[in-house]
Amino acid sequence: MKYVLAIDQGTTSTRAILFDTNLTPVFTAQEEFQQIFPHSGWVEHKADDLWQTTLRTCRQVIEQAGGSAADIISIGITNQRETTVVWDAKTGEAIYNAIVWQDRRTSDLCRTLTGAGHAEMFQDRTGLLVDPYFSATKLKWVLDNVEGARARAQRGELLFGTVDSFLIWQLTEGRVHATDATNAARTMLYDIRKGRWSQTICDLLEIPMNMLPTVKDSADDFGSTSLLGADLPIRGVAGDQQAATVGQACFEPGMLKSTYGTGCFALLNTGDVPVASKNRLLTTIAYQLDGKPTYALEGSIFVAGAVVQWLRDGLKIIQSAGETQNLAENADPTQSVVMVPAFTGLGAPYWSPDSRGAIFGLTRNSGPAEFAKAALESVGYQTRDLIDAMRADWQQHATGSGGEAVLRVDGGMSASDWTMQFLADITNAPVDRPRVLETTALGVAWLAGMKMGALPDQAEFAKNWALERRFAPEMQAEERAAKYGRWQQAVQSTLTY
Ligand SMILES: Nc1ncnc2c1ncn2[C@@H]1O[C@H](COP(=O)(O)OP(=O)(O)O)[C@@H](O)[C@H]1O
Ligand SMILES: O=P(O)(O)OC[C@H](O)CO
Image (tube, rainbow, N blue to C red):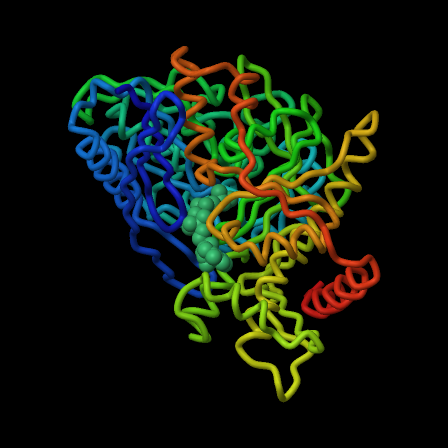
C-alpha cells in the first residue's frame, strides 16, 4: 500500500497521519508537549519539542504501517500559524523559545505602531490588523531582547521561520529554508498582493531580510528528508486553517468553512481578489497553486472549544466535553444566561485584547446546565459575528446571486450536534458537517500527493467531499433576534475601547 504522510503540528499536540491513496486516514500518532507561560499573557513552546514530537510521531506511524518508509509517496506539513522561531543557521538550535500565536507580549508595541499611524500601511500590504497575534512583532521582540540577536541576524547567522519553515529546515538538515504563501501571509511581513516580503515593513521593524525564508506555492518542492528511513519528498505546506479550507474543498469564491478546535477560524474564499475588510476581518491567502494565490477573508476567534475545557478543568462541572450536550438539552428554557468567553481578549471582529470574560443573566436557579448551554451558545454567537462581518464585506464584491451561504464545519467541537444546530439557528444558514473531520491533515495530504501526481486533481478532489449531516435552521426569526440582541449587549459591555 502507498501512503501520503501528513504532519499536523498544532498548538497543543503534534500528529502524524498516514493517508492511503483514497485519502482515507489509516494510521495516526499523536504527542502533546509542554505549554510554557513565563508571564501573564506570554505563551511559549520549546522549539525542539516541536521538532522532536514531529520526528517521533512520524517514526511511530511508519512503524504502525509496517516500517517501510519507501511506501510513502510524499510528505505534507500543516502547522499552528504565526508562531515564531529564530534559529542558528548552522546548528538549527533556536536562540529563544518559539513565541506562540496566543502570546500578547507585544501589545504595547502594536499600540505604538497603530498610534504612529502605520495601521493602514500594514493592512494595505499584509491584509492584517496590527495585533500581537502575528509573527512580525514577535520576531522584532526576539531581535530586541535576545542579546546579540540583531547583529547576528545581520551577519546572516540567524534564520526566522514559522513552524512549517523550522520543520522543513530540520527535516532537510539545513538544506532548505522555505515557507509557503499561506504561512507567509500570517507574518505581517509579507505583501500579499505583490507576493513578496515587504521591504517597507522590514525596515520599519528593523528586521534583516536575509533571515526570511523563500516563499513557495502550497504544493511545491520543499526538498526531501532522509531522516525517516528513505529519501522522502516534501511537497505540500499550508497553515492549518488554510489546509482545512483546502480539505473542505472550499475552492469556489463564496465558499465558507469554520473549524472548531481550541479556537475557531472561519475562512471565506474570495477567489483571486484580496478583499479589504471594512469590518475588521483579515485578508489572507487561502492557498497558492501554480504561482497563483487564492485569497480569503478570515475571522479568528480565540476561545471556542476552550470554553468547554474551562467547564471541565476550571469549573469542574463536567468530566468530558460530550456531557455538555445533555446539559444544554436540559437547561431551563426560561433563563437567558449569556457567557462572553473573552478569557484572552476578543479576536475578530472586536480585536479587544484587554477584554475579559463575563456572565450575564444569572438567577438563583442557574446551574451547570445553564452554564453549559451558555458556553455552547457563545460559540454560535461569535460565529454569527464573523459571518455577519463576512457577508457585509463580501456583498460589496460578489457579483451574481452567490447562491445559498452554507457553512462547512470541522474540528473537535463540530462533533457536538447541539452546538451545530444552534449555529445553524443563530446564523440562519445551513451547517454542513463532512464525513471526514480530519480536514486539516486531509488538505495538506492532498496538496502533497497531488503535487507528485499520485492523487486526483482539484475538481476530482472537490467531488469527493462527502456530507455526513446537514443542520438546517429551525429557530423562529423573533427568538433569533432576541437572543442575538442579548449577546450583542453582553459583548459590548466587555469591550475596553
Ligand atoms: N462533543 C463535544 N462537545 C463540545 N466540545 C467538544 C466536544 N468534543 C470536543 N470538544 C472541544 O473541541 C476541542 C478539541 O478539538 P480539536 O480539533 O482537537 O482542537 P485543537 O486542534 O485546537 O487542539 C476541545 O476544546 C474540546 O473541548
Ligand atoms: O493549532 P490550532 O489548531 O489551535 O490552530 C492555531 C491557528 O493556526 C492559529 O492561528
